[in-house]
Amino acid sequence: MNSLNETIIDIHCHILPNLDDGPSSVEEAQEMLERAKEIGITEIVATPHLIWQGEIISKDKIKEAIELLSPKISIYIGAETPLLEAPNLLENGQLIPTGRLILLDTPTIGSLAGLEQLIFKLHLKRFIPVLAHPERNLALARDRNRLEHLKNMGLLFQINGSSLLGVLGKEVKKSAEKLLEWSFVDIIASDSHSPEGMENYRDALLLLRKRWGEQLFRKLTKGNIIKLLKEAREVEQRI
Ligand SMILES: [Fe+2]
Image (cartoon, rainbow, N blue to C red; front, top):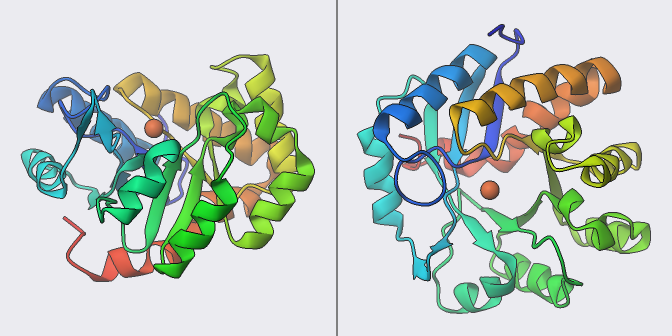
């Protein structure tokens, strides 16, 4: 696998073994890390599903899982928060931010009612919400006015590399391309669950750079992320 000769930060990755639908062994997780390193990824936010099989994952469990790995890549504690449960989790102090970043899992269907109110509440607590893979929710991804409104509220948008490759079908691919065209995308991430997912990410990044240009590629893989991870990079969450 060729490196992209860039340093890349992946803010959405199911890299931790046996916590969710990510790798099912330490070895598989290590293999993902090897692939990530070959691509040029230097920092990863570990984002297991915050609620998995009805249970809320604790920060300690995430930390323990990170410690099982021997990465040559920095791994930050994080989680993928189910959007619909986020208001309760916020109220109960159960969110697991990475610095100030909160990654919100966009459901593929539904109108995402209450999203605006959630953003407002997250901002009150000084969190920075990032909406993961909005391209998968076709109703949202085609509603330019709402996207614009959400963007103006300070919501950041993260698309998945695999969406650009068409892994989830033509419609999702088209939505991801539209979001790029409309300049709504702040970040691209792997959302990978396996070594194969990392390989897809490499292909997606090559495609992004070729089709959308070097400048945007750098912004979405690093430039916009450095600011976002500023606090996580400075404090104990770097392992
Ligand atoms: Fe995910």
